[in-house]
Length: 117
Length: 115
Image (cartoon, rainbow over all chains, first blue to last red; front, side):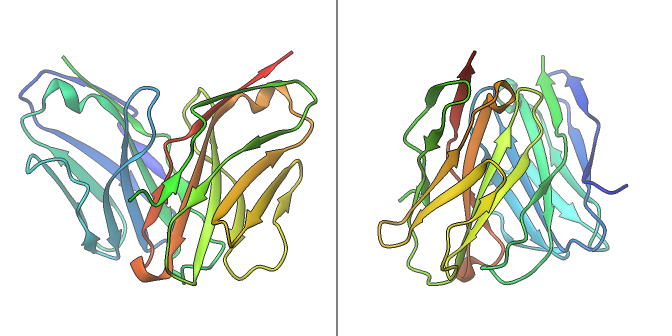
């Protein structure tokens, strides 16, 4: 497709289960970002990929969170042993890799709404 | 220190009036870009406007303009002739050369347009 695709769009699971969220960026976009947004709040940065490597993992809240990207394309964000505080919308965005002053913005997917019971 | 500061959690504007949403940023990098995004209640993030640190003129995109004051490190978004559909959250973001492609977002401003 033409835009960033995230799946599933909604996920409801029980506390303690593992969940895997998927992001398919725009073709050719080498930079990929994951954010978390709680209801009515701003964007919380989680992790950023440049190609398959993650120069910045500083935003991952705990060791229960991990992410990978293979083939410079699809990325998965995995949350192990989910807790109720993990409930949020998880947004993925992609961007062309370019110099910082470029006008290339991030393009966002529609997000995955995660609810932990 | 916060890279992006948006000090207005909520704003109200009368329909057809102009409104300014504030954004200040913190960087020592001479090369950076500033972005504004709109997030309606439906949740999608919509890119609105961009300003580069080396741009000599303020950016404009239709009813959106960016009041870029480099010395003050501010990049306020001006929406002219507000419409009901402008009611949304607005986020200011920055990308700087030193940190490659990392984007920093502010906490957002909720704008409500009153009929």
